[in-house]
Every structure is written in C-alpha cells, then in structure tokens.
Length: 149
Image (cartoon, rainbow, N blue to C red; front, side, top):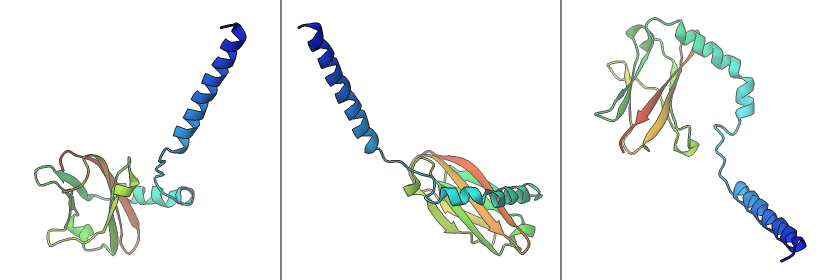
C-alpha cells in the first residue's frame, strides 16, 4: 500500500469517527432543569428574597429524612404553621426531571407534612419547600439520599 492510499484511508476513518460522534451527540437526551429556565433566571431576585426571608426566621422549619420509614418529614414551628396561607413541597431529582414530584403543603395536627419515598428511585433528591404568609414568601431546601426502593 502506498502513502497516498494510507492518507485516503486515514481521511475515511476520520470521517467515519466524526460522523459517529455527531450521530451519538444528536441522539443524547438532554434534561433541562426547567423548560422556562430563562424566564426563571430573570425572576431569580424573588428567589433570593425568599431565601433571605427564611434565614431570618427563628426557629425555621425542619426537613428530616426518616430512613427507617422511608419518609421525608417537614416540621413547622407553631408560630409559623398558623400563618401559612399557601405552600408547596417539590421533590426534585437533579438527574432526571421526569421523576420530580410536587405536592401542596398541608400540615397535620402536629404541624408536619409527611412525604413518602416508597417507590421513588434510589439516589440523590432535593426537597424544595416554598410557602407564604400574609407578608412574605419563603424558600428552603435540603438534599437527601434515598437508599432503598
């Protein structure tokens, strides 16, 4: 084989590799955190204010993972629980947004909200808690790791 054939063969192999990479790249599933991420980014100052409002609370709501019962327990202090007008608990899966779960924040008689992790995928989750009272909006989050199905 002469050097001209080797160069031609090298170009053909290179073209096949590049074509393969383009094909693989096009078929990758890209999970955006949100479809309207640009609009959310513009409104992020509101989120910063919610976080500041939460940091000023004393005591703050507590988000705990009960591994034995496979539950996330959100407990509000009495003084905050009575003032809640509206709220939401978002179980966020960073690796796959299709597994996310939203629930309206409804407290029981112990000022708790209990969210079962039974049947949820193993791995890292974020519990995102938002609520509001008459005056302000609040936001808190906690990273949890679900270790069993």
